[in-house]
Length: 182
Image: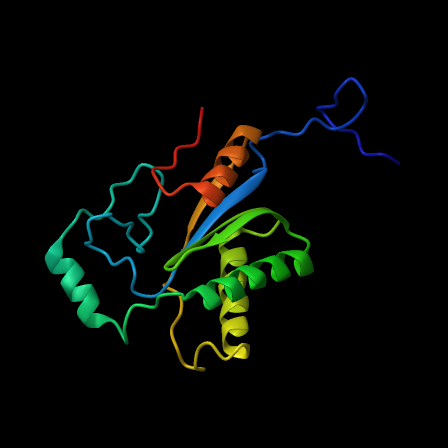
């Protein structure tokens, strides 16, 4: 028996509610120590206040200096060979797990990935970082105990095709301010 759906289109298919699941995500993750709380770019709190519209940490040189003093080791910068390994690891993981990779770009201190997938974006980024770290170690580019990635990630839900297009364009070609069009 075919289940009855309340919302069917003229062809009998279930109407997709675009607010249910995003078409894709824009995921960003940074290397260790390259964006500290208190620096001029501002940052978000990790204590549950990272919600849309909540205030960000303002520039604060004292906080930034304290965060720097608390670091274990130096900030991690990706070399060109490392960037290639990380980008390849992103592509490999997406292919292996069936994620719809739309764009990826690895810079010296962060990576952007636009993809479509079912799991929560937090779990996806955790897997991307773990896979990239493993690939860097296996390639001999880092030692076993080196801290590569900062905690957390940024994730943007992309609800409309124009949002996906803007995120792909930003990932591949932009580094200025990113605004999702209305």
